[in-house]
Length: 241
Image (cartoon, rainbow, N blue to C red; front, side, top):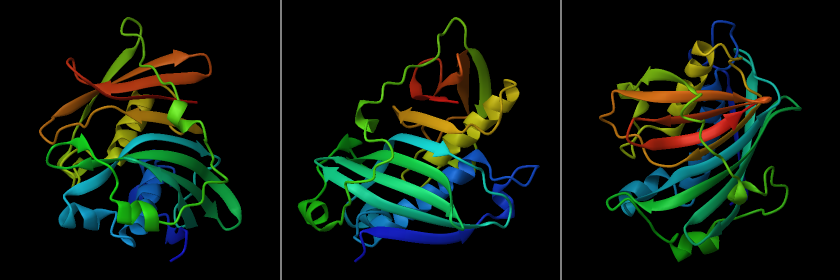
C-alpha cells in the first residue's frame, strides 16, 4: 500500500463562515479525516478502537495556513506517517487547491489504551508494516515545541459552550472542536478570526459531561497565546499568529 494517502474533497457550505471562507475547525477536519482514513488502511485507526480497545490521540500540532479555501473549492489533502516510535506517531500533511499549497502541518499522536487512558506501545505488527516517509517534515522540532499558557493575571477569559456534537467516538471532546472554541474566542476578544500559524499542545481530555470551557487569550507581540480549561484543570495550550 502507498506510503501516503490522498483525500480529494471539496469545501462544503456547512464548514464555511459568513464570508463563505473555510472555518478554522474545517481546516483541521480535513487533516483529521485524511489521517483516520490512512490509519484505517492498516487497522491502526478507528478499527483499532473495536479490535484492540486502543486509539491514537492528538498530542501536538503545528500548522501554517497559507490561505483559507472558499466555499466549493476542490481540496486535495496529502498525508503520510513520518515515523512511529514506541507509543508516538508522527504525521505530516499538505493541503492543495489545484496546484496551490494552502496548508502545511506536522502532528504528534500518542497511542493509548481507551479503558485505562494510559500510553501503550504501538503493536509491533503496525509499527513494522506501516509505511513511513521521514523526510520533508514541516516541523521537525515538534517534539521540542515549548508552549506556555497565558498569564492568569492579564489574560482575558471567554467561556464557550460544549455541545453534544463535540464529543467523538473516543468519549471526549474531539480535537477539531478546540479550534471552533478558539476561533469563537478570537472573535469575542476582537482578534482576527483566521490565524495563519497555529501551534497547540493537548494536555488532558475535555470530558463529555463538561458544559462549558474557558478560553484564555493574551496578546504577546505578534502572537496570541491561548489556553483551554476550567478553574481546576488545563486542557490545552498554544499560540496563533
